Image 1 (tube, rainbow, N blue to C red):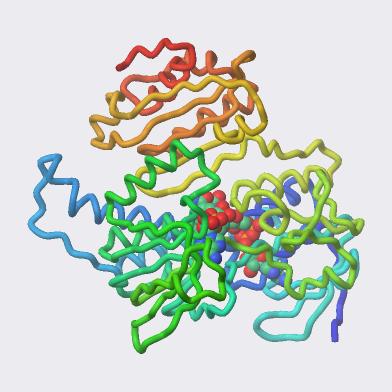
Image 2: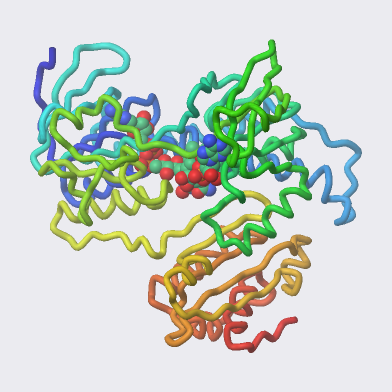
Length: 479
Ligand code: FAD
Ligand code: NAD
């Protein structure tokens, strides 16, 4: 039975990038703030089983690949290169643990009280906390707001049970203690390609089975064409336009994956094909997580995909209850959740908090990286918006040549009449970092001419952005 009732101004349920960043901003604005988190450490999916561990393994595996295949081109000959996977995993765990402890420190510094338990809405101003370890449930009440920031979990496929050992989600694929011989990845999206790359670089054969007719259907198609070619050259095999119908275990480390063309009827067995492998990664998207959160009791509305519906100020259909991050519509990205956490705290304080979704960047951290912001060419054509294109290849960029990574290009899309930047698409070395310049330019309503006339140090990869911008007006110089 719930006992004491402790009062706060604002309570966040969930301490992922949405909840923890929002709670810090809330405390900075003078609100007495609490966070309820069921996981043993703060940071949510992102820090514990998402962005950070995946990027640690991407970095380590890329270094391994380079040591094996690239360094000799630089005149560095290593006698032998061996993989110590246990050490690679330990390093990843250290990176995660330092960052999650950092949040604990930030909570303390900002006088945020955190409760280790499962939070559930008891009423529009009340959260029931069931401690994870021991103790009776208790109540917390919020004078100003309860913010739901419970994030998302992996999608499952009908009839396929994820055991996180052989048939894994991203969480299990970050934990392998042995390099799979053959890893089948279901879903050629962001997780499939990032984690597929990790294990391919470390020695796995990787086959990606994708339902759509092309991988990464949400990325500019000119970028996707080159991206797929490069990944194939790296050894990743793609089978597109197929649906997985069953996965059968044939003993220790032996799985059979059955699939068929999407065009075949699901009940027809005639077009079935079979892949044998030792691990399967299911990476077919994520679903918002609001199980047992008490939404139904209060009548909080969700859409047909289970996302909590909010207005532009993150208010749910019940006064006093707000929602942010992966739980609500929009891209499932850490920086989107963070911006919403900040905005909701500022709105509660009577400030004009808002999120400018048009400039939300996206990145796939493969090698080369793929990064984009704003509209793709396909979207502009569909919307009938007149645009001009400027493109510049990294093969003609001095710094890329010196680095030895020349695959890829920068593409800038600008309005045909106003020259305002509408989209930026980069495939190439350090695209994630390069994209920031285009994001800031777009945030200020900049034109391609603004980028073209800004200083860019020489020799840098950023010069490719200036050259692409010059390309919009046929003024490329460095070719
Ligand atoms: P989450 O981070 O999911 O946090 C929600 C928290 O709420 C969790 O800790 C959960 O335990 C807690 N919770 C849930 N229910 C309750 C309850 N009832 N009571 C108490 N606590 C509860 N995004 C990027 O931008 N860049 C990347 O590079 C990137 N890489 C990724 C790699 C992988 C493998 C994955 C899976 C995701 C990646 N993402 C990336 C996506 C990113 O992790 C999410 O968009 C982000 O974490 C969403 O933040 P959030 O705060 O909304 O939710
Ligand atoms: P995703 O939406 O990126 O890709 C899922 C892919 O699976 C799609 O290509 C889809 O067509 C395919 N698919 C769906 N059902 C299928 C089926 N039955 N069989 C075969 N293919 C199927 O989703 P994800 O890769 O699982 O990632 C989940 C979320 O996590 C994404 O929203 C992403 O934004 C986020 N994330 C971001 C990053 C990053 O920012 N670098 C990294 C990892 C994850």
